[in-house]
Structure formats: C-alpha cells, structure tokens
Length: 433
Image 1: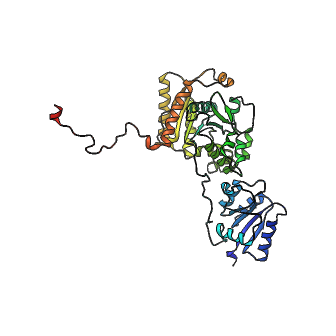
Image 2: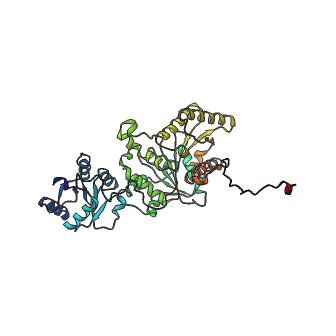
C-alpha cells in the first residue's frame, strides 16, 4: 500500500556510490520507499517547507553547509536525519537521528529506517527523535545579561560586573565578558587590536560540531589587568544575518561549559515575529532574545530623570513581556547624584509606575551607581574600574544570582520559621526565681 512506504529526501556529493544505490533500490522496489533526490541544502529546506511529509533525510556527511540548524529544521517537520559518514564525528551532538557508513547495504538502510523513521500516514512521532533541548549533560556556568537603552552606560556596567566577579578567587580567570550586541562596542572599550576571533567564529564552530572547552576559550582574549576573558562581538551590524538559531544556542552553551561565569552585553530590543509580524525582526534580535532566555539574572541599566526613568521602564516592561520572571530582574540606575533625596524620588517613581502597569510583579528596589569621572582614561589605559563603582553593583547582582540559583537557601531573615513543640525546652518559674 502507498501509505506504508517511506518517503525520503537525499542529498550527496556528485557521483557518490551510496546515493546511486539508494535510488536504484527505491526504483526497483527492493525497499518500500520513494526517494527524492535534491541538489542543494536550499532545495532540502524548500521541500521540507512545501507541506509534503517526509520520513527521513539521507545526507552526505562530507557536504559543506550541513549543520545543526538544517537537522533541526528537518526534525521540526517530523523528518528523521540519517547522516552517511565514515568519520568519528558524533553527529548526534549536532542533531542527527542516526548514522550509516558509506558502504551500507539494503538491510542496514531498512534497519535504520525502521528504528528512526515512520512510513507516511501511519505515525505522527518519530522514534529516537532528539528532545527539544539540545544541551547535553554537564556543568553550565551562571549567565548574567546586561541590557538597557543606548547611552545609559550598559557596556561599562557589564565591564564592571565582569571585573567584580573575576576578583573572586572562585572565578579568577574563568569569567568571560561576551559582547552580544548588534553594534558591538566592547572591542572599542577594550582597545582591542584584533577583530577576530569573535562571536561569529564561536557560532560557526558549533554549526556542525561541538568544540571542547579549550577550543572555546581560545576564541576569547585575556584582559590581564581585570582578570577576565573577552569574546568580541559582531564586526558589522549586518553580520547578524550569518547567525543561525540553534548554532547560536549551541555556541552560548559551549561558552557556559568553558567558563564559570558569563556576563553578556546585549541590546534592549526583544521584539519577535508574534509582536511585529516580521520574521526578519525576530532574526535580527536573535542574539538578545536567545541570551535573555538563558540568563539567570537580567540587569537593566537606566539613568535618572524623567526621560531616563521612562526609557528604563520601557525596557523592563519589554523584558517582562518576553517572559522574563520578575525575580530574575535587577534594575540599575546609573550616573545618579550622591544625595539621598534624588535617589529616593527615583526609586519611588520606578516602583509606583511598575506597580501601576504590573501589579502582580514584585521587582527589587533599584541599585544606584554614582557618576564617575575619568572613566574614559581608565578604559583607554586598560586599568581597573574604581571599587566604588564595581563593588556595590557586584554585591547586588551576586545576591540576586544566589537567590535565583539557590532558592532553598534564600530564605528571608524576616520570614517566620515553624517551631516544633518542646524544641525550646520549658520555663519553670520556681527555678527561674
């Protein structure tokens, strides 16, 4: 019956023997399968998007341009991915459902299809399909994302956080500051002489492989005086078009495995297709949206004054709308006066306006950072930022990070604790007298 046949896509290099063999087996009826030959990755994507169901994608592991995003695209269409390769590469780590050696025979193909694919019309789920979360087991470093409107000192706040956490012996030399903004400024702020490697090389290295932590660390630069590593950002704004979603997520996951703490400098634009109706806007904001989804704590930086508070609250509301939990948010007001009255008025305005728009959300009181002069000189010389800027910010973020990552130990000292009867002993008035 027609409904009991496999329908497979095929993509391989020219004159590949197995490609010819599979076509011959399908044409002669030796295997109950329709085999659709394709000539490029773009054609594979187009056929997957055409609406016609496919059981499997048989693809040559030696082709250029195959990566985890293509494999994920196939799996999203309930199409198993079978890579034909004689290398030792772990294809499952990049999303392949199964592998075959190049010299496979008819029985090996039938066995693999029976295990991982489904005849069209008989099954909705594919046995052996990888789960949606592609992260493997193992340690993942906490991630702190820093965002805020332009001109608020967001990037310098990220530098201060990286320096502050790197001063802790538990994080010394294992903190990375990742520039994940579309207009990447960290290279300028660090007076970087090189433009590569950077985030593009990180993502590219994870497109069809899983680099070891040492290779990931080699893509970063050592900021000796401040004791952290720096991952340079995009070299041009338009380079966001080279980023693929799953390769980016895998790259950030590799970054979290290679370091003990990640501080990410990101944009404040989190709009996606559901809000704008534009897939291009969602792709452009991929760096910020992906990082926000991974971040344990999201620091939103703003400035005082009516315009500063208005812009700050806009970003906070956008973060809440994007699904960020309120307990993961930390508001920082930069460049404030040292007088307590101005800080109190700013804190009250932020609290009242947030309560008015989000009455069910509780956000901690903002952290205030003073105006610091001669920061440009310190950045130019690669010197450490002043402790008056770094220490209060780091302490506040550390407290929030501890509360989020270890909620069981974050009990408030004002919270009542049940006391078992008799656990406190007894009071004897005669003895006491």
